[in-house]
Length: 128
Image (cartoon, rainbow, N blue to C red):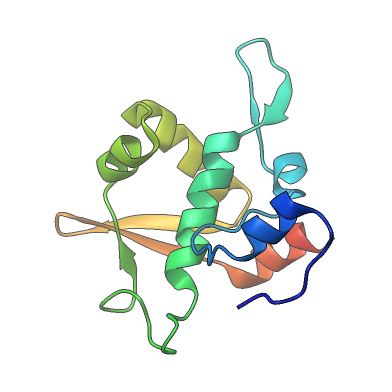
């Protein structure tokens, strides 16, 4: 656990919390955009969060194992819509953005939605 003190009690207290979960590089908000109805580019926060979740699932577990069964991660668009509290259309649009940027792809096998992330493309937008 974090034993060094910074002199800032809030920073020290947060440093003692073992936070796990989604890591979102700030640059993703500059690089992952959607087109608004007015034709303007703006950060796509849902696509950013979706990519962060997909990346988290593809990171090795704390014990070095894969977090999902099979070759591809499986999660329905409707499950993501529920998870993020947005419409199914909004999740589909966000996943379309990720696919158009080459960051992730999805396909259906039987009744299952399969996801694949593309590490080289993710690295490229994270470290331009």
